[in-house]
Every structure is written in structure tokens, then in C-alpha cells.
Amino acid sequence: MSDHNAALDRAFHHAVSYLDGLAHRRVASNASYTGLVEKLDRPLPQAGAPAAQVIDELASDVAEGLVGSAGGRFFGWVIGGGLEAAVGAEILTAVWDQNAALYACSPAAAVVEEIAGRWILDLLELPSAASVAFTTGCQMAHVTALAAARRALLLRTGWDADADGLADAPRLRILTSGEAHASIARACGVLGLGRKSVQALASDQDGRLSEESLRAALAVAPTQPTVLVLQAADLNIGAFDDFATLIPTAKAAGAWVHVDGAFGLWARTSARYRHFLDGVERADSWATDGHKWLNVPYDSGLAVVLDREAHRGALSLRASYLTHDDTARDQIDWNPEWSRRARGFAVYAALRQLGREGLRDLVDRSCAHARALTAGIGEIAGAEVLWRPTLNQGLIRFSDPRPDAAEEDHDAFTDLIITRIVSNGEAFFGGTTWRGRRAMRISVCNWRTDEDDVRRSIAAVAAAVDRTRSDLGA
Ligand SMILES: *Cc1c(COP(=O)(O)O)cnc(C)c1O
Image: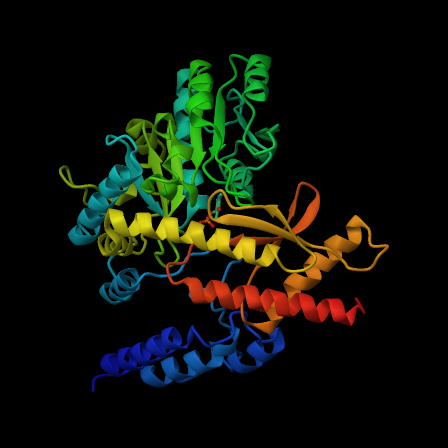
């Protein structure tokens, strides 16, 4: 067997055994930091080793440190799995090793991205003339879209930010709700707009930015170049801002509207949830992820920009040694990177494996599992449902059973329960502070999660609560 065959053969073997093991293995890693370092920190070798041996040892050395987030009982953060076709396409992407910068480097990678981008616009019902960039994740999709916003808004004032920088430029402000994801502020920092330019406006009981606070903020500085960032599902409760009302209000005031739809935009494919997204197509830019609800492996983000010229003007690049194409799409014109992996193949493959119906079923199924998990856990003694999923996100708080327990004790008890569930290994949940109180987050967006996973996870939570309460003598 040739060397590459042997290495690929071993990699395939380890890949299949990892996937086969997902139903039985611990979800959380039980590796210790020092244990991992001990295994992996070999002396940097003088002489190389056979490829197959490197792969075998890599797989065994990291095994304990891997998290079963690809499996069906992982409900932490918002982390999708990898659909079979997308994983297969990722393997080929690595093997083909195409540079997805230019059509000339890989006509196949360029055309696949162009088509996958068009499919995404169609599926999410965004303007068909919009431009698309395939980024590492939603974070860089924000950077990409907000670079276009910065260009367009400042050009209107006669300032070319991309040529002249921001010193002495009119100051932009970014309005958003207090529920905005921290990646928005970071994008503003990277772009030189400044994290402090982000103003968090009030939201209502359902986590939606209030129109009144938007109108008031716009009125404070009616001529200041403004970006409004809206949420298509926030990370705690999956709240959607009221696009149909807020977007026209902001646009009438000259603002650029950007939508953070890291996972929530995919709800557009479901008859049951699409109403949350009514009017979202009227924004100027959108950011989402392939690696969350679409279940493409990491890294896979998508930026969509209505004003193609602003998008291209902010990012396009020409150099004498590059070969540009007049008919085809050169990815370097739309992306913040130069050389990069051909991440379009996996998106294309996921969309083909699912089709419109498969994606709709995945969204509906995830939301049903989130409701069942929240309801089932909510029935456990001492559990309180803080947020019943309106989409795929739920929140639970656990009460400290001691009679004199205060809110701080319930906070600590909730964190303790989360730690115990995670270390028990049967299921994985994360924590959050929501409206000033600690809570356990439930997020479902993995295509593998099924009813059995829901049942096993509820039982695991019940067992952890039971044990902890009896430890406390309750
Ligand atoms: C995950 C997430 C992000 C950040 O996306 P990455 O893909 O991790 O870069 C931004 N906004 C929301 C609402 C998210 O859930």
C-alpha cells in the first residue's frame, strides 16, 4: 500500500470508529490538561515517522480529549453536528486541497461556492442579487458584512474608509439590543469602529428590541451614520427582533440594517417558525453559520450583502500575479482571506443531502426535541422552567432545596447541577446568566439528536439532581 493509502486507510478507520462510538461514549471529555500534554508533548522529532503511524498515534493520543459534540446528547452553546454528505465532502476537500481564492486556482471550488451561495439565498428567501461570502464562522461574517456597511455609510458622507482609514472620518454608531452576541462588538473593534460604538438598547419581556427605544436612539443623532444590528434568534432564548417594524423604521432614518442569524435564519425553512422572520429580507446584510443548524462541520460561516458594490469595494483585491476571471466568481473579491480551504463543497453537499424538506424537518425536529427536553427536565423536583422554547433554545433553573436558600444559593446550585451532569458524561449542557440569574441552557441543533437521546438526557439530569439533593440532605 502506498504511504498515502495507508494513512487515509487508518484515518478512515478512526473516523468510523469515532462515529460508531458516539451513541455509547461519554459526551464530555474526561481528559485532564496535564494528561493530554503528557501524551502529546513528545520531543519535536528529528527524523519523521511513517504517516500511518502518525495518524494512529494522533487518534489514540487525543481520544480522551475529544468532546462528543458530534453526537445527539450535546446541548451546550449552539453547536451542530456534521451531516454524512458534509463530512464526506470535508474529507474530499482536504484531499483535493484546492485553494479557494480564485477561479483560476480551482474552477470547481469557485463554481460550487457560487451555486451554493445562490441556493442559500433561495432557501432563506434573501434578495437574489445579494453577494455571498464563505467565511470561517458567523464572527467573520459579521466582519465581512460590517466592512461593507462601513464603506457604504461613510461613502455617503464623502469618506472612503477603505482608502483613507478612519482617523478624522465621521464616527459610526452601532445600535443593537442588550441580547446581541459578543461577536458584534468584536467585529466593530476589528473594523476600527470601536467596541464602545455599540449601544445596547432596551428590549421587551420576550427579548425583542423595542421600537420605542430604537426611535428614541435614532432621534438623538438623526444624521450620524448608523448600523442597526438585529437578532434572528439570540443565544439564550432564540428571540427574533420584529423585522417587519424595525427594519423600515431604521432604513427611513438612513441606517444600514445587519441581521445576526447565526442559527435563527434557518428557521425560515419551516412553515411553523418562518413567521418569526417576516420582513427579514428587507435588511442590508445577514450573517449566518453553516456549522450550526445546517450541520456542516466547522468552519463554515456565511455573509450575505445586498449592496454588492459596497461588499466588493470593501474586500476586493487585485494583484499583478493573480489571474482574475471575468465570467466566473473569484472568491477573493468577497472574503477577508486570501488563500483558504474550499469550504463551499461541504455547504453544497449538506444542502443536497437535506433538500428543502430535509432542512425543514431538521429545524422542526430540533425544536420539538428542545420542547420535550425542557418539559421533561422541568418536571424534575426543584427544576424551574425559565424559558419554554419558542424555537430550539430553553432555560432551566434548579433550586437549592435547603429551606433558607437565597437566590445566590439557587445560582450556585444550578451551576453545581450543570457541572455534575456534564461530568457524569451522559449528556452535556452549558450555563448562562439570564436576566441576572444563573440558568442551564438547552440548545438543540444536531441532526443526530433523537427521542432516545432526549429520554436518556432527561434521565441523566434527574439522576444528577437526585444525587445532589441527597448530598445536601434534602
Ligand atoms: C454562534 C453565534 C455567533 C458566532 O458565530 P461563530 O460561528 O462562532 O463565529 C454569533 N451570533 C450568534 C447568535 C451565535 O449563536
